[in-house]
Image (tube, rainbow over all chains, first blue to last red; front, side, top):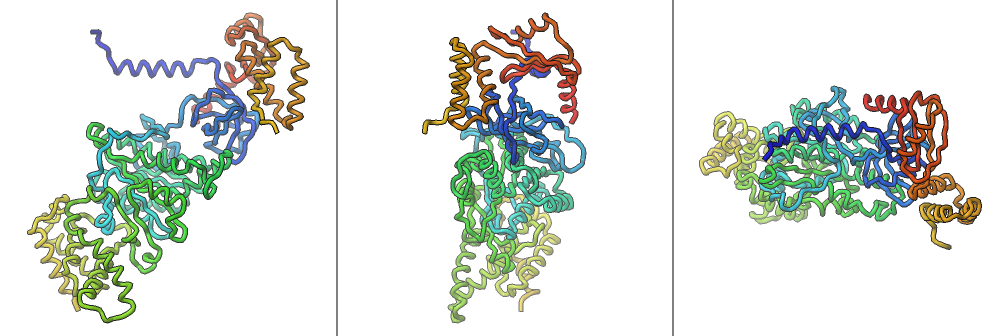
Length: 508
Length: 127
């Protein structure tokens, strides 16, 4: 058989395609008939495909657009740039491709727009590959069930609502309840624990000052080297806001498909749905509930379905998603929240009341759930947190009764006391994710009653004292614990000893 | 009220009549009457384009040729070959701003071999 060099074949094919592109011939052209609000109506271009890229030739250069409404007599296209230079009569060309963005490790540490253009002033990005913005999700056979933990470093989440690699966990809550803070802490934790997980933060219509602050913080924490930020601001065209999560996902998929792990954060999908509503209404698609178009569910389901844990045959990479949804006055039964809740594998619900009571992160134990993370929870944390959720729920129930009278039996009283301590323990300062050993030791100390005599206000102090002592005296043991296996009895004894001795200093 | 006809269907009707040998003025009067009656006179420009496109599909092409300098007959023959239709009618315009080369517009398609286009493409690549 003749020896065929495959590598040469591919380069020759590429050259042939490049040659064809420069060959001149008859091109399909159309003409802009109407323009306004970022939407151009085009006559002609009968060969145009759905979501295909168009180039509008204006007197100041070329403006790109993509065809979304293909009708008998005209095409509705959404511009990717400003519409000020486009006017009726401009020539429109078919580009012959759907939208692609640059992907690859070269994007790490950069802030880009949804088309992959740098926004951080750090020079051009020389990527070798591109990825499809709209890409079909992986099929059933290409997937594997979620089984590896993705530690957020937030004790309340890792203990009660664990997240696995490849999971989609929604963060939902009113404005100013710490939704983004959870996402940022999770990103920071990936760098602090050296998990190797790549972060892709997609800001959809976020204030540019907020994005700048976030970038500064990530740089200060040393997380930026393993992070890509896809940024869109409130003044960007709706088309860019609409594309941002898909473009970010394409960048994350590169890592998923190359045996790595990536974490997507979509901040937030409420604004994404609003941008899509604007586009749809301007394209004259019929409005449905709350004026959203009929395919607003598909908008988010096709996006989140791309997050997956891949099978071993495909390299076992993963793409985890933390979409964020903002509710109005805690109403999780509104249209977009219910849609995204039903798409994701669980949600972390942030409550305003808890936030103002000083319980931060303000995670509601009753309304939050992780539907697949249980199988992925670190065994070490799982072994100590079994009763945590139950204890907290019982406490919440009893605490409401206890407000009416002080005559309580001893058992109820002890449950309330324990619950107060657990709640206090789960409070955590921002930007300080806890490692596995810190979580195991802290939860073990409180849930086994070692801190029952420590006043509630001093729980955090006692915890800090214990952790300092454990790290100073038993570094190797704690390192073993961080590996994640179920702790042996002698390790638990070490923790118990440190807990009891640290508690002594704070008892009254 | 009757269903709103798409421009494409009106164009197909007009093209059929024209190719069927009906006098041009009669067909256009009929189309004009329809546009006025249905209040769609604003679409006349687009309709003309649609009729031209439909005629082109059926082998009758009107090609607009723009060039910086007058073109000779051999080039005209080349253009007819490029368009590849049974009947080609050329409308010529001279536009010095094209700098050189020529541009052929047939309904829905364009061949742009002008120097100006090449310069624009170069500029777009650099940006």
